Image 1 (cartoon, rainbow, N blue to C red):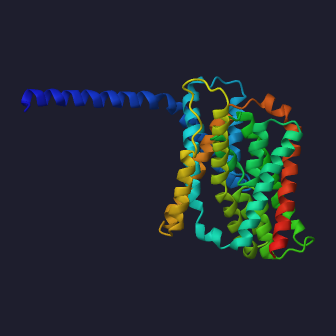
Image 2 (cartoon, one colour):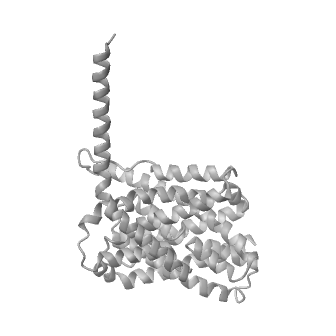
Length: 355
C-alpha cells in the first residue's frame, strides 16, 4: 500500500497531466478564434440581409461575403485556422442538425407512388445533370455539385457532398450560385405556369416540392398559391432531402472503392464507408420521427443549423478565386438552366402520372 508521500506524488502527476491537456487544448483553440469571430460577424450580416431580402438564403449571402473577402487583396493568414475549422467541422454539425427537419411519417404520407416519383426524379436529375456537365466540358467536381444541389436541396446538399469529395472552392461556389439563381427564378416563373399547365393547387405544390431546390425557395414559391399548395410542397421537398444521406454515402463508398483500385500513398486515409455526419443526420431523422422533440427545441435546432452552415460556407467562400470562377461562368450557367428545366419537366410528368 502506498503511503501519504506516494499519494501526494500521484496527485502532482495527475495535476501536471491535466495542465498539459488544458494547455494543448488552448493551443488548438486560440489560433481559430480570429477566423471564427469574423465568420460569426459574417453570419450576422447574412441574417440581416435575409430579413431585408427573404428570397436570398443566409447560406447564399454568407458564401458571397466570403468570396468578396477572399478577393479584396487582404492577407487572411491569421484567419485561416478558424475559417478552415468552420468550413469542415461546423459544416458537418450543421448537416447533422438538418436531419431534425425530417420525420419518417411525413415521408410515408406520400404513399408508394409518390415516393417512387420523388426517387425517379432525383435519380435522373442527379445523373443526367452530370452527363450534361461533362458534355459541356465542365469539371467533374462542378458537374457533381450542381447535380447534387439541383436534385436534392440546394446549398445544403452542395455543402454535404463537398464534405466527402475533393472539390475546389470555386466549384462549390459555382454550384451554390446556380441553385440560388434558378431557385429565385422559380419563385417568379412557376406560379405563372400553374394555369397553362392545368395544375390544381395540390398538384402545383407537389410539382414545386419535386423541382425547386432550396427549402426556403419551395416555401416561397408554393406560398404564392396558398396553403393548399404549401403543405404538399413541403412534404415532397422534405422527402427529397431524405435522399441526401444515401446519395452522399453512395458517393463516399464509390470514392473508397476508387482509392482501393489506385496506388495510394502509404499511410493515406481512405474515405469512410459511411461518413460520420451522415450517420448523425440519419440519427436526427430517427429522433424527429419519435415525435418527442418539443417544437421550441426544433426551432432552436433549425436556427443553429442555418448558423453553422452559413459559417461553413463563408469559410469556403474566402478560398474562392473569382477570376478562375468567371472562366467557366457561361457554361456553368447553361448547365444550371438545363438542370432546372430537366428536373421541372421530370417533376411535372411525375405529378401528372400519379394524379
